[in-house]
Amino acid sequence: MPRRDANLLRAAALWTVFVWGVFIRNIVRDRTHSAGFITVHVTLAVVSIAFAAAVWRVAARGLERGREGQESGRRASRSAGSTTAGRS
View 1 (spheres, one colour):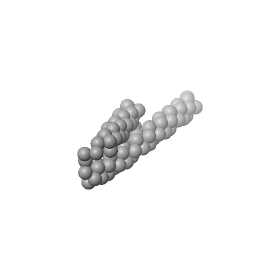
View 2 (cartoon, one colour; view 1 turned 90 degrees about the vertical axis):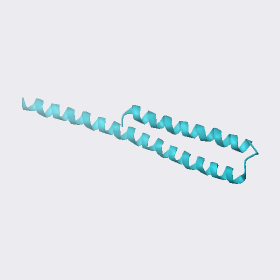
View 3 (cartoon, one colour; view 1 turned 90 degrees about the horizontal axis):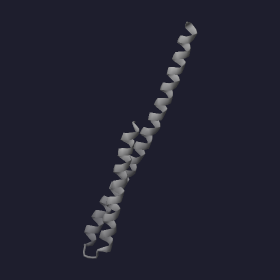
């Protein structure tokens, strides 16, 4: 995965955590909401933050696989270059 794509996924994950964190903090401080409202929104926040963690992990794996692919491509081009050089 290109670094740009991974960084976009990471930014989305961080934004999700930030938005839900601020929202939950505001809900907890405001005593005008019912217990049901708070329960539903805290549950939504937990699920969204779990998805954000999963997206972060996908981005990390994509970067790792991208690096592995680049390394194997470099090795293959080096070995192909050395085999053709030996035939000359």
